[in-house]
Length: 430
Ligand code: HEC
Image 1 (spheres, rainbow, N blue to C red):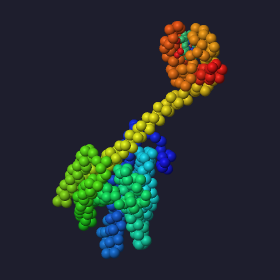
Image 2: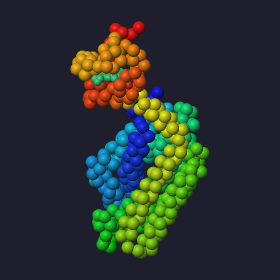
Image 3: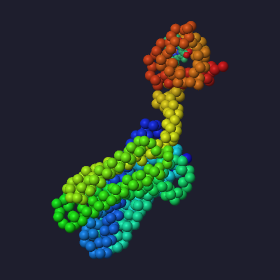
Image 4: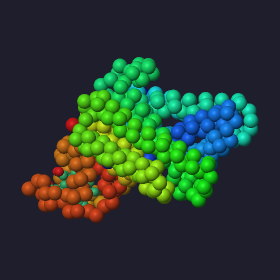
């Protein structure tokens, strides 16, 4: 049993599908943001370096603006950057409950470099106006940590598509070797950089309007940078998606996976077209469409990964469904009795017996109804049936009139049933 199995309960298929929808929402909150975060900090560190080295004022300004674009607010960093990670890990523990996915611990281990990386990049951001090289190094190191952390993160998630290999993965390096994992990571990186380029157009020229009407060299430079980076990486992304698909384990394939991958390609083609138009001089407000479409493409990529996972975990899901069915049939009668206040409330049972049943029943002799000593044997190991009979009496024995319905509360019936069986077993059973 895995550590994560200790804090996840067996869930029913209905609960699981709810949790899987939540997973999609978490990924959608997290991935586009973190993709832009990684891309922008990467380029910011780069421009900062070249600004210092070549004494290039334009690069130095762009380095500052780039990092301000993504690390503008610490709470946003926590809400979009850190919290979804924790929820994602919890959800995977739930989905993989009792699946012995050896890759799950790697997913959780990736959080350390990711969170330290985020903190370093924030330190870089707040110290960017100081002229000390050490802070530049902190930023560069932060970016490296993020790149490494997300490699482990994405690789372990794509390894969930590969249940047959789980038992063989004993160290992080085996995680890295998988070509499918590599394809997913590269697709993540290229889409992150594409998102960064498109984000630059959107946030500098449309949303923040910072450079909207600027005619400066700087505005021209930023625009060109955003469009070219956006274009190159939007074109590269499909390559790695296809690479990841080709190397997907056989069990993960299905037609819907192929169809939704084609959908991603179409969306990316439209985005490419928009970027090319803007490069040729169309107004930057097209950036809004490109940005929105790219987020949709992200969503479809997330759905894609979900489809592959569901295909791979088909057997595991069946196992969970059966287990939860077994658990429910076991728990529900017990719970019903507990909730009622109980078959063990003998004092209450005795009083109900004296008040209601005793006018027609004794244990040892027949009155209007049969002696309990002669009829309770069949209920001995089946108190539910006794409760059911007293709640809705049926005709049983032709020698007796039918027992009337007594209008008792379920708690009273449970208590009297418990009391009858106990008294019968202790005093009248032969
Ligand atoms: C008005 C009379 C009357 C009262 C009150 C009454 N019973 Fe009965 N009970 C009968 C009769 C008559 C039968 C036989 C019914 C039959 O065989 O169809 C019977 C049968 C039973 C049986 C046997 C069922 C079987 O499957 O053979 C049980 C157990 C029982 N009663 C429990 C109770 C309990 C517990 C109460 C009080 C909460 C109660 N009865 C109150 C008249 C009564």
